[in-house]
Length: 143
Ligand SMILES: [Fe+2]
Ligand SMILES: [Fe+2]
Image 1 (cartoon, rainbow, N blue to C red):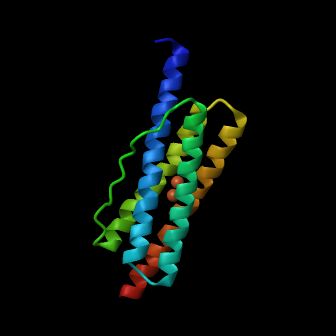
Image 2 (cartoon, rainbow, N blue to C red; image 1 turned 120 degrees about the vertical axis):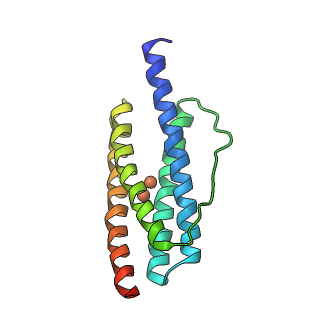
């Protein structure tokens, strides 16, 4: 495989992984909003779901621009019985999403895509911070 093709394949694989993760996150957040918490918590999770869906849409756009025909994407609903444990797990996922967009920025060549990666990275960072605050608040009110 030529070096250029290798880099392109790596970019495509990375984009697929991100797309699957974003769609799964959106799905979990919607389910979580349905199951747990008060109005504030539900609204926060719907907002995250909306952001993650937008991210998924952007990643899919890049894949299509690269000529990819996108078929089946595995979406799985996770167990969410313990909302505290789940929030901890999702904070870790948001943190890894921050690193994901940092890595993706290194893989894309066009400046406008690099800028897009930076802006999505900023949103993941915001999710992480907000979720940390929500978690604290939830813990306090449960006492
Ligand atoms: Fe996202
Ligand atoms: Fe996020």
